[in-house]
Length: 149
Image (tube, rainbow, N blue to C red; front, side, top):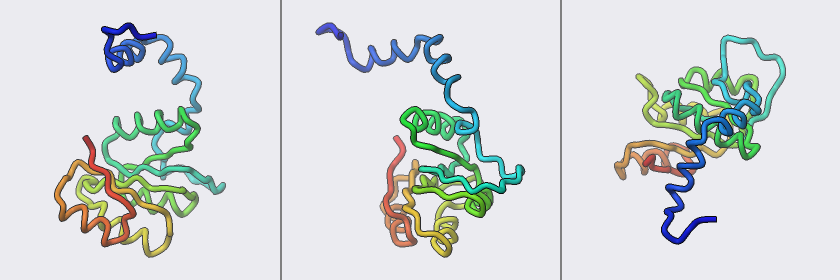
């Protein structure tokens, strides 16, 4: 219970900073769900994921996967457009979280390619805040646009 002078955010931070319980909790999550989808491993079994994250920022993608998996949202992530196309050859996803800036490649171009073969909701998630980017994302097949903080 919070005292009247304790900030809920500070309380949450103190809970998260208790290292041992967090390690124990995260060690109970199946490793296969927390790691990046590895396109070099052959996959013969089709897997259905709730969410596919396409983002080249490894730390952010891994922590987002861990968070979603805590709530039983089966999540995978890939770092490149080529890996995402490979992913969909052997797997399905109910939702795609797509970053615009993917190294030397564009999430806009990937969205166009994905729309040719699959009909899955695509949410653009980007640090880019231009209204032009939002309009472009929605006009090429994105279902929504969320600005990263």
